[in-house]
Image 1 (cartoon, rainbow, N blue to C red):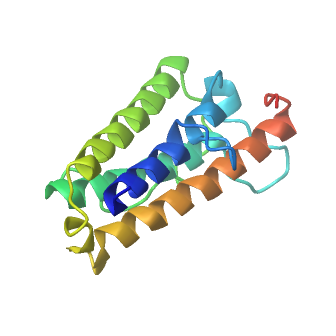
Image 2: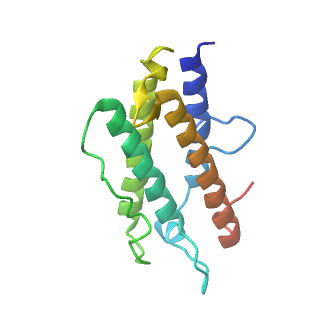
Length: 157
């Protein structure tokens, strides 16, 4: 297995392929409503699932922009500045679809790279390291999302 194939396999595992070690992000979001995504425990300063998803989306957008040379991604993460407004179901579903689309677009870019390409500089680190860091970032926040779902009673093992 090449380095590229290993990296793509890891990329898949953090989002939509069961690895056996942890649930993928897509599964953590499955069946989640907009109300549940915006839920915050009363009196607690904690992030909502919506905020976490937007945060993940911000960094995936940054990576995709870096890989494609695009300047379309926002330059500042405002995921946690949106307040407590509950969004409409359509807005939530659009956010989840955008996340899937960007994740898939990155996967396509990664699949086309050679092992040598992965060693290229991307914002001060190699592409390989940047993607590996983002995988760990996604896994961390997926754990938070599952924890929040368990607290609200919307996660079944």
